[in-house]
Structures are given as C-alpha cells and as structure tokens.
Image 1 (spheres, rainbow, N blue to C red):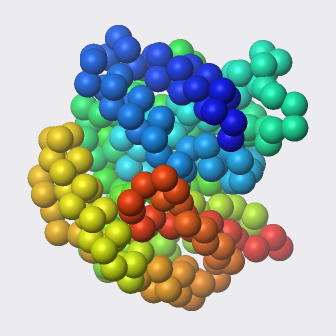
Image 2: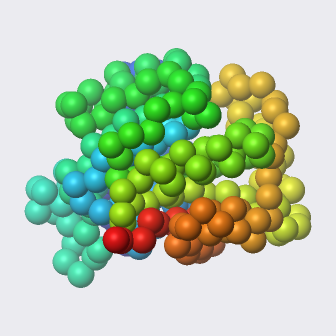
Length: 241
C-alpha cells in the first residue's frame, strides 16, 4: 500500500475514536499505523465484498474501522488507480472480553451506522452463525489448547462453502523474535488492563495441522514486516461445494 493511501485510511479510521478519550485515540493510531496486517488485508484482497464478519477478540473494533474507512475513501473516488480495491458492504459483529473496549468501539463506530455492532463476550462460548468470515487476530494464544480445538470445530461447522477463517498467530518455533513478541504482548495486555496470562502458543506447523485436520484449505504468509516479531497470518477456507 502506498504511504499516502495508508495515511488517508489511518486518519479516517481513527478520527471516530477522538471523542472516546486520548488513550483510545492514540492506541488506535499506533495500532493501525504500525501493524502490517491492516494494509496487508487490502493489498492481498483477503476479505470478500458483502461478507458478514465475526471478529472475535475485536477490542475497540479497529479491524472494522480500518476496512470501512477504506471503503468510504474508495466510494468517494479518491482511491488511487492501479491499487487493490478494498472490500465493499462488509457488516461486522465483534465480541470482546473487556466490555469497556466494546463500549468504546460502539460509541466510536456509530459513524458507520448499523454495519458495526460490538458486544462483551467470551470467544470460547460465543454463538457462531450466519457468517461468511470469522477473524481472530492475535487472540488464540490466550485460550488453552482444548478450547482452541473446540473453537476450530465450531468455526468449521458454521462457515459456508467458500467461507474464511482468518487468524494471526505467533510462530513458537521462530526463536528470539517469538520470545520478544511474548514480552511485548504481555506488556501491551497489562497496559490495557488485562491480567498477565499464561499463553498457549504453538509452532506454525501445529496451527496448520490442526486446521487442515478439520478440512480447511490453509494458506500462510508472514505478517510482521517492519517489526521484530514472528507473526504469521493464516487463511483457512472452506472448499466450495
């Protein structure tokens, strides 16, 4: 993504958080401005248009804000020619353990009308139905292995043919970058008011095996460019009938 476009989306996506408090606003700017997965989602055409998206562990709804802001810019005719287009007409339901973060996101993202609704809840127990995409970004390692397996089962059962499960994980086989990412992850969790939990991580090949065993078609790509981490984005799709 060209820097000028990234800046435009960043400004549009974070402006709604300004009235929710300085911490929320600057948190959003830091996350959306530095994390490579957000421009990567558009550059790689990950989300199909017209999708119903369930964002588990959604935080303040930054994923929705980023993609809907990009759509607005494109609809205004300000999208650069020759640049991958953002998805259109996405609808988001987000679930977040910290109710205060969901409330913040609902307040900020009311600018997008009924296309975003966030709720307090536990990703291990949330109802998964009538969705085209399930996203769990940087969250799976907070739940134990048995619960991870159950979540995978429920996602696979709920997605239609062609449906997408999108996640990002840290590759536990990546050595020092992985260990550094754990230190940063715990520090950021503490800053947001979370306790410092045990993390339930796996090597990349174990994540892939767990998904392929259920029949997902899996594609992986590094997603920590410009950072010292060992993050990998995993696209797990249901085959079309």
